[in-house]
Image 1 (cartoon, rainbow, N blue to C red):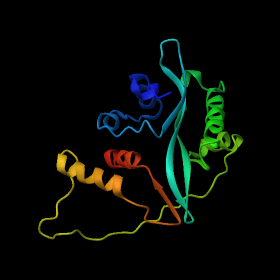
Image 2: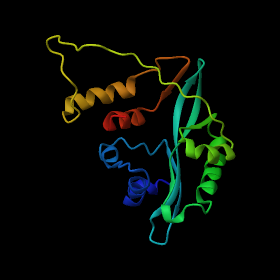
Image 3: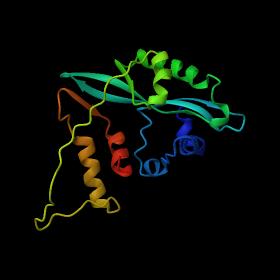
Image 4: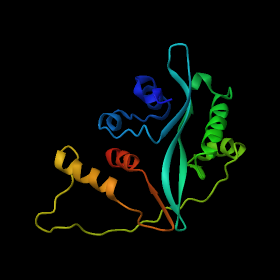
Length: 186
């Protein structure tokens, strides 16, 4: 259910377990309820105690479009770890996603790899190509974007929603997830 981030329990969970505060993203109106699918356990006080979350993305892989689900925000409050809560949630999320997505993926720490491998995932090498850019543009009229200015923010939003894949080899499209990266500088 989308309850997790409609109340403060989900935001508090992600803040306390992962150190990630999604308040700015939610308040900016970028939270993507249509593509976000939480699987969570709650305690008697309605606090999230364990959660596995999926984000649906439109992907292009080797020239073919497909629907993918990225696992994220997976965790359990420290006092309840090692009880199998996330194993149950991960299996439920996999079962739910398999009939709706062609590809399931995640990014994991080395410590989490054995858990995900036992859940059916296989590790792949990640590559992060980059291009070093030297110098600065000093053309008259060029200015740095400032997201506190409404006009700059609208420009970035327009780009996010109108952009198309830049690669037929591998590309993802989820405008509101893109805007998360813009807001948090990831």
